[in-house]
Length: 385
Image (cartoon, rainbow, N blue to C red):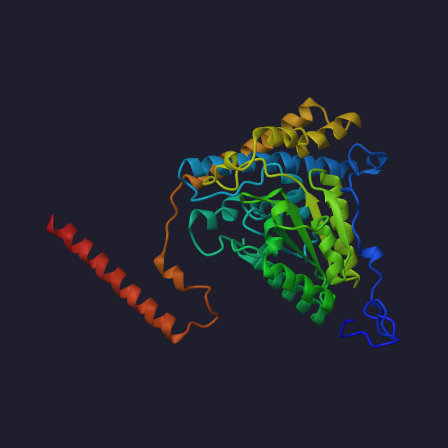
């Protein structure tokens, strides 16, 4: 006999309280059983040709951007670069799904999304160069600074979205995170607050298979990352992350749902990181090349080009034009990154507080005195010659 049982009574341990009932029907919140796709299906016939061409041009430019940035690390012009090669469809679709008044909260691997949003390519790489604060003004393009700590940008995204709703602004926030970030406490806190507050925010998880070297099956036992949504009371969506129109469609639907007061959505885009975690990583230690080649056959650019050719929306000349535009972007980026910036050490104290603290003013005065003394020393040394 257990402590809950009494002689002559039934065991009611599995019976809910009389007034208990589910607050939300979980069925509508559950994601698709298989990743949602558009390319290669009958639904592709209804896709907007102009959108397809723009997605293609941005994918081609994004692939070239990834290659150029990787080369810059090999030349010592960047300290590190987390490539998004293979994930371009997620990055481009994320940027194009947003309206001008919306905000993008990227992770460290999302420089391509930042560029597709309108930030200058060299400014998007400035932080990875070890030069100047975030590298760009977040308010200009409504793009938060690139976030290196895993998932810490997610609560910030929820906070901005919640504040926008309280003010009555027509603003929706799109927060990007990798599969590894879903194992962080910040992920849980952000989704929980977003759902409770019904904040106008969409979370896009780019599931590229690995959190550095840790495969997804060693991170979670959930059926999918999108299934985590139901535990917070928000819809989950599962989409093929290499199908650019599908990602764009799912994002637009979720963003409009949030804009119209429907609350947050968790979207998992199933994709793959073709390159290593960063230039400091040896991916051959934890995955084999056969797996990589399987995903190369599901390349987002090739998938979209096939659709465009099948519908006679692009030909060899159109592809060459897209590649030429991408090469021009890469050449400009290369030239600007190969020019050493002129740095002012005093900028260390700018953009920290709206009004400098006493300690910051003291530190700035100390540095100014040291710089003046150094300049005076070099001047006297030059006169002595």
